[in-house]
Image 1 (cartoon, rainbow, N blue to C red):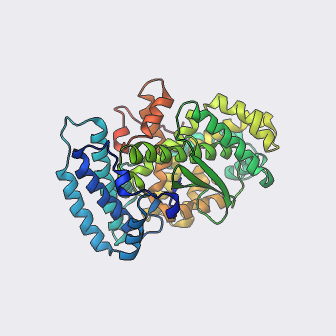
Image 2 (cartoon, one colour; image 1 turned 135 degrees about the vertical axis):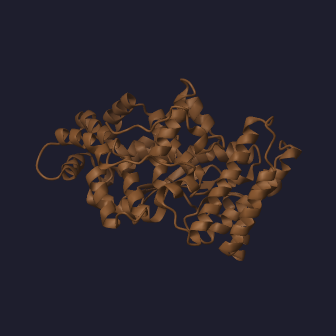
Image 3 (tube, helix red, strand yellow; image 1 turned 30 degrees about the vertical axis):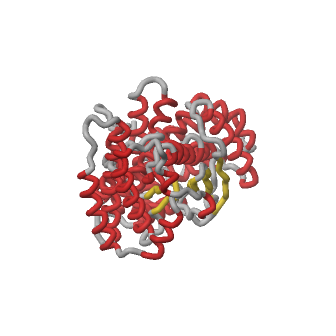
Length: 440
């Protein structure tokens, strides 16, 4: 998950005049002015919501001004309404090139999400689907207990024994925990492999890099704090045991070709090369997050198709973690089934946010239908408390991205690179026959 970061002025000393590069034509001036107003509004909302500004690497004085002014939410709402009218009046002609059209659509829809978040901060209560549509430009499908029954029955057969199914699954996974003293070498090996594979297909600017920290006391398992200037800080939460499959997942999702690459390409191609100042800020509760999380999750499969991943883990990661590599194939057979239960997490969040169940009920649902061990289920409920309908960005986001990229032809890497270098919206990814995969 991409994360908010306090950006030090030393990380990026770029003036507005430098960002508005000479290549920007005169007819972009209006959009640039509107984009600046948008950035300042996002920074203003961040004074009321500590999670809102996930990253900022624009002019330092804009953040300083936002902190000093601390505009009331009512004033932010008024300015956002005025900006929406100005953006509507600046709609480009149908003859404009695709990137100009995409920029306009992106800015307009991102501002809609700003207005929705401000409304929530002032007390508006939205149901789960209303909220996800307003903030992320998407609505996840609804599931019932019956939708997951066949998968759970298959898991019952694969994991025989005494006790509940989730307890048997948890016991099975204990053989695949990375020992704490092996975490760093295992993650470094995974990161090196993800980076190597990414660089074979995507050109990144010189100097891009990230560092890794191991932390505790978080509601998430991993987090990318993009700091601008092509650098990220990636944090891995060690509160709960970390399984060997999470090494590739986190290295790809948070790093290459996931969040780190996504943010680097947006900064390089849209902010620096085009001077589009709106890409100096990332409001977490916005359509941008579905693209960010969806591409980060799909990027795992792009970088490591299943057969190649299994071979790499057997040869490199299992030995690095001092685990038995002969069990890798069976381990992933079980994980593939559990992955079909991912939408159970959305359903727990939907019912919890809609007031149909309480926190305990949400954890119970995650245990029974999502195969979350109790400590992990409770951690996930804390995540839902903090981020609410954000959960759809992981699975629905991945499915939308997958369907879109696979509709573009056989060059998955090329389509992936183009997507993470452009201001596309989630609703624009929906292909005519798109249907989220169903548990089976």
